[in-house]
Each structure stands twice: as C-alpha cells, then as structure tokens.
Image (cartoon, rainbow, N blue to C red):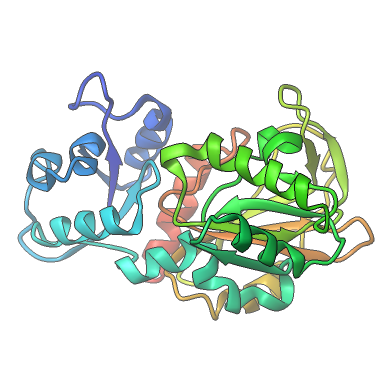
Length: 300
C-alpha cells in the first residue's frame, strides 16, 4: 500500500511541511510513500505532476494524502496514477460521493440537519431556498466548506425569513470563498449542539463534535474534532454510526458527528478520508499504525 503526499511549493522533492509528521509516521508504520506536485496537477500538467512516481510492475493500491481537489482534478489524478499501476482507494465517483454534501445527503438524511442547495446564486434562488426553513436559524456553506470562522458575518443566519440578513450573509460568504467556491451553496438548518467553549481566535462557538474515520466500513479511529474545550470522556455510540457507514459509497471516509444540546447525536457531514484533516490533537503515529492494521486485516 502506498501513501501519496503532495509536495512542498518551495521544493518539489520534499513533502508539504503541513504533512511532514504524517509522511514520517506513514513510513514508520510500514507504508511506502510517494510525492507529487499539487501545483502541476492543478495546472493540468499530469505528467509533470507525477514525474517522481515510478510505475509499478503490477497494480498496487494507494491512498492520497494532501490538499482537497475538485472532483474533476481528482479524476485526472486517479487516471494518471492508474497509468503507473497505482489504484487509489476511492475512484472518482466514490471521492465525489463524500466530498460533496449533496452527493451523499440521501444516505444520512435521517440523521443530519435538513439541507437544500443550488448552483444558481441569484437573489431569487437564494431567497427561494431559504424560505423553505421558515423562521428557523440556518447556516450557509458551499458543497464542501463553510466560513465557520467568520461565524456571524458569513455563516450563521439567525432567522431564515429575514431576507435582508440572508442576502447579507450569503453575499459575504460568496465574497470570502471567491475562486474557492465549490459548485454552489447549501443551506442547513441550525441545530443547537452541546457547547464546549469559544474559539480562542475567531470566537466562533465550539461544540462537542468528533471525527470518525472509516476504512472498508470499519472504524480506524475517532478523534475529538476541536483541540479546545473540555470533552470529558464521552464518546458517541460507534455501533449506531457503524450501521450508517455500511451504506456510504466510499472505501475511505470521515464522518463528523456532534452531540445535540438536548441529547442525542447527529451527523454533521461526511468527507473523503484522503483529504480530510487530522485534528491537531491526533497522534499521527498511532493513526497510521491503526490504518496499517486495518489494511492488513482487510488485505487492502
């Protein structure tokens, strides 16, 4: 099994510094590691992007570890690696399934906040979608990310029926996302969660959330989502979320779950396991050890 990391912008022969600890942990725990140029692949230069990766004699499985890619770029990356006999753990359809909320929403619809979405960012479209929530509080995000660290300016809308506020928040959100806007925008019903603390820098409310990582439908590890606040020793019901994971059309993905203020748990969102970040509190060495054990157990 190969783990394929993106390189450093400064030196394309070394790993991106943000992933250096993971790169070292992967090697220490039995994985082969490779490096490619993220910038070259974004520019459409697939051959240059993969020039340091040798062609395998036979098909080998791989896991990408690095920055998020659009589904279109991921498909080029996937196909380029296939020509070198490296098959990423998620094909382009599986990648998109967990990377874009609208793709997997029907799989988690009973356990996640009500959501709707559109690629049409016109005023009429924005107001039509927001009206479906009545006067409930909502948040806005794109198909992948929100501007949660700009909570009051570009994320949280206290009353979905307040048209002026809806337009103000959405326009600011679109402005901040700029060229990084993923596909369109999504409205989600705001559910009150168990409060932990305020973020030390952005002052956004931090709530009791966890990131569960699944490989081959089995839990690799579960992490506290935030590095601040007192989690105590409470963990979500893994068996419950394990059952839901069986229906997710991906081999390697994350499931972010949160505890509601009035008790019970919800799924916040899914993510492709190759591009979802590890929290700062995560023990990288332990994580790659568990990942390798799961690979060996399931002969990945």
